[in-house]
Image 1 (cartoon, rainbow, N blue to C red):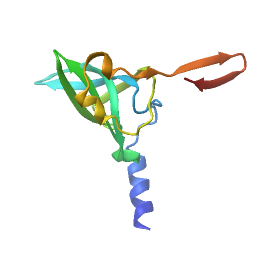
Image 2: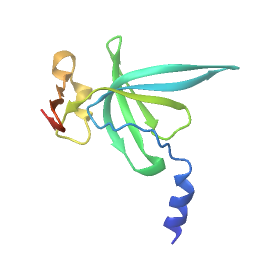
Image 3: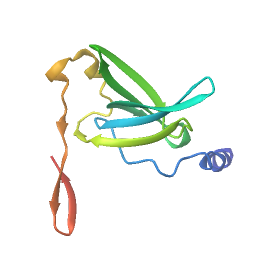
Image 4: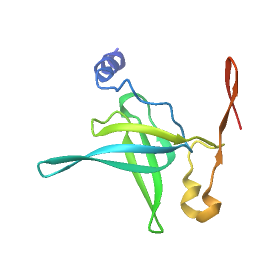
Length: 127
């Protein structure tokens, strides 16, 4: 019974406009940054390495390379500081966590793109 009550309370804090994205996808995360009395939106672009939990507690980890160094950042999906999430490229992966990308560099760290086949009247995904 307690779980149902908690779920009902958490439901009002969940965002309704979260796009479909998964591990391996390249995303642009628009994050609200507060510096003093000013607010601005900063874009963090990278590959989704992991997704964890569900509901209002769900998080995702985004990895990108900045000046030859790997930078990973964990974002709560339903946080108020997340302004927008845009999916750029979808990738075909066979694992739920892509931590192995940490030890790969350059071309070895590329992922196969998942393309959509457009047939009139049908939308099926294929690789």
